Amino acid sequence: MQENNTACSYSVVVPVYNEELVVNETYRRLKNVMESTGEPYEIIFVNDGSRDGTREIVTGLCRQDKNVKLIDLSRNFGHQLAITAGMDNASGQAVIVIDADLQDPPEVIIDMIKKWKEGYDVVYGKRIKRKGETFFKRFTAKLFYRLLKGIADVDVPQDVGDFRLIDRKVCDALKLLPERNRYVRGLISWLGFRQTGVEFVRDERFAGESKYPLKKMIKFAMDAITSFSYRPVKIATYVGTVISAASFIYLIVVVIQKLFTRTTVPGWASIVAINLFFNGIILIMLGIIGEYIGRIYDESKRRPLYIIREKIGFKDEEND
Image 1: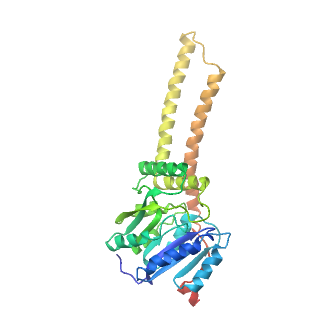
Image 2 (image 1 turned 90 degrees about the horizontal axis):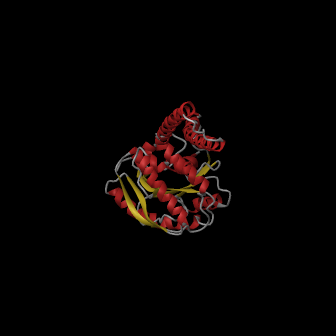
Image 3 (image 1 turned 90 degrees about the vertical axis):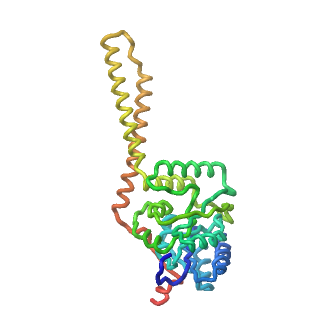
């Protein structure tokens, strides 16, 4: 563990987006857990552009509890950037990231702290069972983690989300990685440091609806794959080479048939089918390349990762 002049021992970062039905219970359970440590702590809620009463509820918690703080983003920037905003403003020697839906039990934080005090710099929560999730969600999640492990350039732990504890030096190192299309758990794995996991059973969502519909899940998966592997582009190159070689061989066969045999050249139906197949392959390859080019363009604009509208409960703001 790194010695520093931080204001508290633990910073708990909680991204929230339309969580008015659960935020009070999240605060209650987190407070009970953190009070049991007997060490100074802060709970940082990051409001990621909520359209319900989440911001007002957290503001009330800030007024009644000096350990609670609020970072109010100017709009919805997404889960990964909300986490980033919380970690950038955390002051603890250890920073803990947990979602507000209570699927990741706050009580597991105690086990994480024990591992951290044993000398580990990163302690992640590893799900051994998922309650209340559909077969499709479990299957696609399992498939994604195995696919990422197979093609990624770094070793990202399987069945692991953003629920984790990171040491202050890891948090500071993470600030040096300014990329926009962020896959935070992958970035932490890329940093290295001494890491271990704590197993737990993931509970059902306490209230409300999932903030990760299929569209966001697909984008999240694309961010993860394109951030840590360029093998899809290499695969596209291999496929293009094989198809080109096969097409050239077929061209030779057609010419030979035309010049030296009386074999009838295939009709329009087969030609159209072949064209459609090859054109489809080409479009897929162009799409893969386009994903990487789009991310290069996004990074080149060098816009801020997020914009903070207001901060409540932070000492710097109180002194202004």
